[in-house]
Image (cartoon, each protein chain N blue to C red):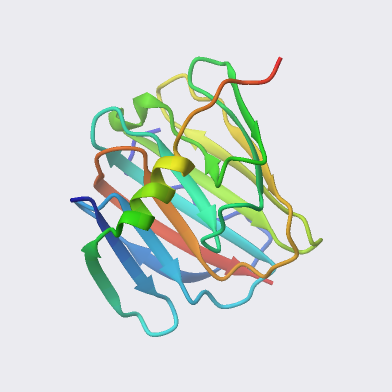
Length: 38
Length: 158
C-alpha cells in the first residue's frame, strides 16, 4: 500500500499512514499523462 | 549540478523556511497548514524510485488547475481542465535531479515557474492555477513508487 507523509507546518507534527482509496484515485488522476493538444 | 546541490532561494527576497522533509518510502508528501505568503518556493534534490514522475498539487484541489509541462523528450504535456497539478518530472527523475519552483500567489492567478537542474534532458515547466484561494497546502506526489532520497524544502516570502 502506498504511503503518505502529512506534515502539519503549523505544529511540526508528522504522520505517515496508508493512502486511502480516495487519495490513491486522486494520485492516479493527478499523475496521468495525457496527450498534448494539436 | 549534482543532486547534493539544492538550489538556493532567489536573491532579493527574504525567504523563510517553512518546512523541510527527507522522505523515504512514501509516495506523497503533503505540507499542510501553510502560513500565508505571497510567494512560495519549493526545492528538492534527490531520487525517486525507478520510472516515477513527480507532480505537485495545491490545496488538495482536483478542479482548479491548468498546467503545462515540458517533458524530458521535449514534447509538450499540456492538459486543460482535467489535470490536478503541475508536473515537473519525467521518467528519468530517478537518475537524480534537483528542482526549484516559485509560486506567485499575488495576483489572484497563481503561477508557477521553475528550473530543473540535472544531467538529463529536462528543460523546464510552467503552469497556472486559476483560483484566488490562498495557498495553504502543497502536495508532492510520485506517479508510482516513492521518494527514495533527498530533501524537500518549502520557503515563503512576502
